[in-house]
Length: 76
Image: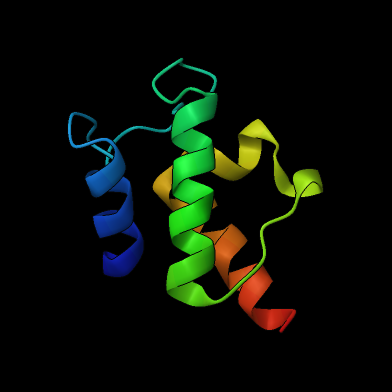
């Protein structure tokens, strides 16, 4: 989770990812942020987050993003 938190903090240092639970639905992350996060996660974990994964519930919180990464890692 620390690696994911670092990636998120690098993209948006102004957001407290450990406490926020409505990152997308609350308007804290925009589409450019999501694209940046996906790119960084894909590179860091050698995974492939696809278009069908682009749902707000996959990016609304740190735990949701971690769960998405874990699912993608298990698909490898």
